[in-house]
Length: 249
Image (cartoon, rainbow, N blue to C red; front, side, top):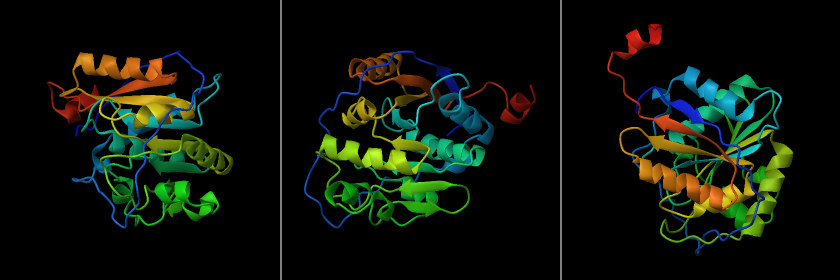
């Protein structure tokens, strides 16, 4: 993954949050993990800080509190960017930041951060304990993680949207900012449902693999569902000159 990406655009489309169907299945004692593990170290910290500031810390605007990160397609680098943006944001603010691994099909955020995936989002949706019992502190800045939890099958999910909305409201009361990693919007409907419950969505596209038609389809799907598209991130961008020289320009 390239060290560079850029915030391409900001969208002003805002829609009302309309609850939609999300996924569900029986639970088992197995965690489906994504491999290879996303490598957050290869991302440029400067660009991550710019991304976090552009999305969450814009002056004179009502900054979103809960933001979904989703790729247009698979392997766009969404999980890496979501983790990196959360770490950059936590280093910039004095208030707690929460990462939520809502990619229940391919859980990976706990692997990025070296935290055991025991109780998490799937348990929080099925149980009634306070949300604090499912969130884990990440060493370092004021960053916390709600892992995916012990999930069953990556194929079919059905979450009760009202239950998910209730848990998100609990997180809103505990954390200043919440970043949610989601499966790719052109592959699964999860990001559509999450976007309807969140304050906005950041779309990740890959310079080397995402076609214009795929990016357009993802954008239109989110907007038609009433999600507020905050912007797009171009990942895996390459340069015709060596990166050290480019950084000096």
